[in-house]
Image (cartoon, rainbow, N blue to C red; front, side):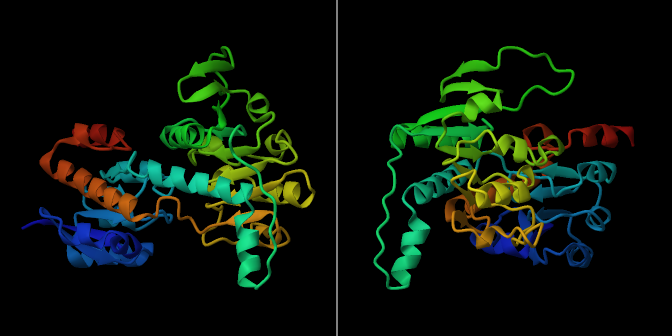
Length: 336
């Protein structure tokens, strides 16, 4: 009999055809809430689970059997407790690379929306008001990309080759104990790449964030870094809400120290302000979308296929070919 895989309901609906037709697996819809998900695993006798981006901190890790796969439907995995999963003997995976284009396209959509005041003029038209507003061309404008991984590079290529923008890359500065070299280096996807944040954003019309939500990146874009942005610059975030200090952003926007912000991700989702007195929805120079960066038909299909492929590889014992997030689990397995 095929192994049973529980798939959290929102993810199952995003790629139902893929999950329903998996040839070597039996995919079953399950609630996304952790207690109910764990109960579904026990009820269905599931060996593996495909889960969303919501936090999983408790009974899920005891519900799955050792050697089972905890597959993240997406690339970010800060919601998974890797240490706990490793102790439970679970193989954790994600789906890198398959959503880059979708997130990059939304990023540039937000840039274009900011440049041409699309939300404002569209709202005016719905209110039956003819209110044309002059925008700016993107050609020749500077876009700084903070985080030069796959998604950041995809954005850089679209911006440079599609819009003729000048694109600067910014990487994290060295952490304590790491060697410090030249801050600037050449890179084929950027005019240059630097770890000097102030240098990277100097003169930038748009600054787009693409760093992962790891502990060292918590509130990476804080008040001090926001102060380096030009007064008319727009900040774009399609990475994770945790890498941005939303209260500091509100203060910069409300105080006229920043041109605007376009955000697809938030510290709390669905969006809820960290500080009720600093609600980004109340500001006129803000564009907000509900975490739809990777939510396209094509990316959803590829994420489902990749998540199931990792499970099939685990079933076949081909661990080296998996997108394994916790290789330490292999040592745990050998020690038993």
